[in-house]
Image (cartoon, rainbow, N blue to C red; front, top):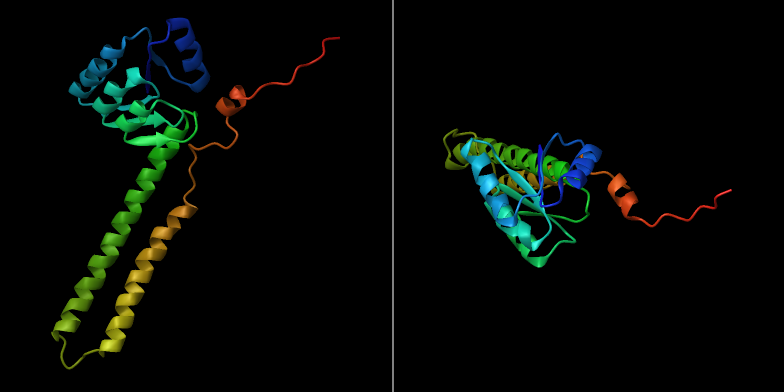
Length: 183
């Protein structure tokens, strides 16, 4: 994980320390962000970019996956593949976890449908004659298969996203702090 920012080095390093990023590339010009991403892709790396401004739009488009902060500019949101609703960089981890869980569910549903059809088509074609099933039972089996796929997809709601944090430090830092009396 690296931070690629147009901010000055001291600010970038302080923020990187707070969120646990080791590699910091600061004072990067807007046009150089996309070039740096191309360079990383040329090294065979998959690159994700998080941005919120007009200057980030070319880099968001160049990246393999672009994440826009929901409070960002319209052009950044349009350039990105994923829009994060909060301004918490840890939501990127949650978005990746959710996409992996979704892909797993798609594979499970695909394999269930293939297995069902491998069994159902030969029976429907009469390959196991005299063993047959009535049209009512076939319709019930087809409905059951569809219901199983739908329920499996709904199980995504139970996915635990460790990257998404409720009441994160970033959210707390953005809240006004009450004044304290000095004694």
